[in-house]
Image (tube, rainbow, N blue to C red; front, side):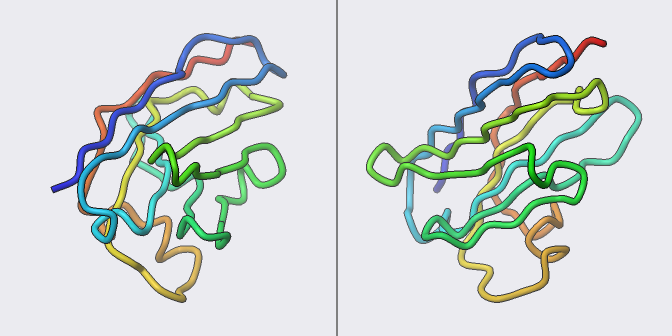
Length: 128
């Protein structure tokens, strides 16, 4: 079993930065692939960034160049560094994990249904 607990959300002004953290526990294999998703009110959950934990990363076009996903395997923690935040980044952000996804298209890695385990979410609000 895998447990994921997010932290680091908050309210910032446009152009600001936040770093989200996701503390993971449980089977390392079952959480080999990890990702951040977000969901704004009235919208579908969308993939933001994903990683295999050993250097393979991918990003949604909307955050490419502004967000950075990383892992600290010694601390069992996933991070999302968010810079140059925009009001449209406002959403509940979720950490997700699943067994190895292997080599696949970005759309596969950022598809919510590919992930078996989810955190409770942390709110990010960006004001203009």
